[in-house]
Length: 115
Length: 116
Image (cartoon, rainbow over all chains, first blue to last red; front, side, top):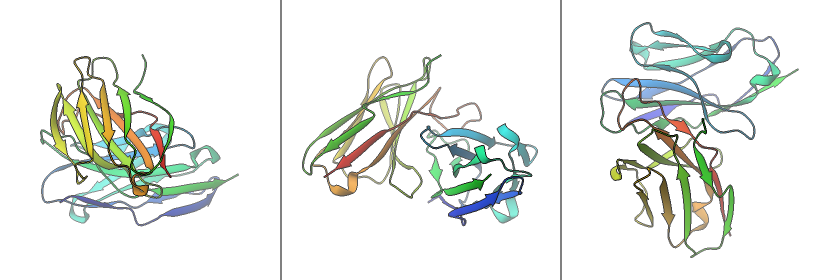
């Protein structure tokens, strides 16, 4: 079965600090990878996604993530965080080519950015 | 265009009761998935429906059921509610079923269910 691990449960940063959130997955086949963000009081939104090609993907709001196949990792990064980045971040995977688009989520990382 | 809509926003029930949650997908989307998000955890897959047929089911008891209507809207039903069913129930719509690159899932705001 697929599983996703997010090792940082709560991260606290000051504005302008750099961010890296870890995500590792377990699956025997080829996967699609996603990062979703949930701002306070809002619904889950897609931040970025990786299907194939360049393993460094860029998303909205200055976020990027790098897929390292050998490490089964898809870490999220941002060079300089802002107070408005305070939110919960979820890493997710699904099986590429599957007839079922079922997403497997990690437990999430709560990011708090102090102004 | 309207996004995914869910109703009701909040719901309070007591143990043993039954609940029905509703979801309207984005116009043109034919697939609806349901997820349960317990506080402090990531969303867990419950069901996926595509073209009114169940395509997949997660590890949830038979007390959970769902259906999809001809207009692609969907209902999630939970019978004999337990305290542990308290959670945020999320609906996601996508153009089709499957793990393809153009089949992004768009999430609704969720229904917050509290079981007392």
